[in-house]
Picture 1 (spheres, rainbow, N blue to C red):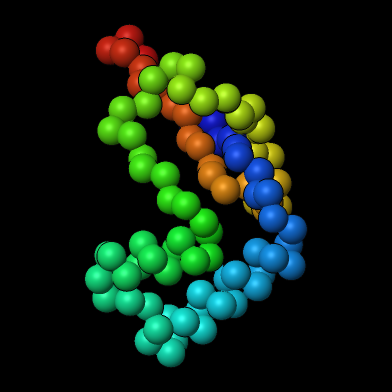
Picture 2 (cartoon, one colour):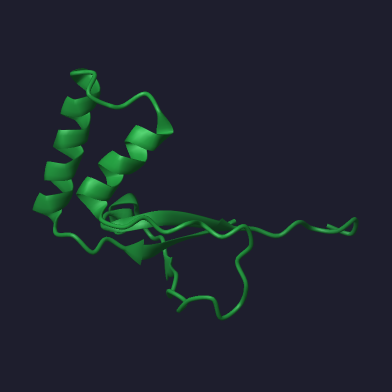
Amino acid sequence: ASLFVGFPETENGLARATVRLIRMMAVKLGLIPASMKQKQWLKRVFYGKLERIPIEITRGMTATEPLIPLQTQSNADGYRFIFAIASRLGPQG
């Protein structure tokens, strides 16, 4: 398998750390709403308008992001996703 990173973080490190700290505090204090409707409202307050995730993703739907080979763990810092690409060998191996 080959590992890649993609979709770089758009926020600076301080903003990410602040959001992470606020989330952790909200969980510890029991401030996370129980219903999905309330969670949607809270996300709109922090993130703005929410977009629906489509059932199917098709070619040309959005711009592609280049994948960057993952060399070391620190190479993954600052990216939202890690991708693993593998192929299965046939009966001949």
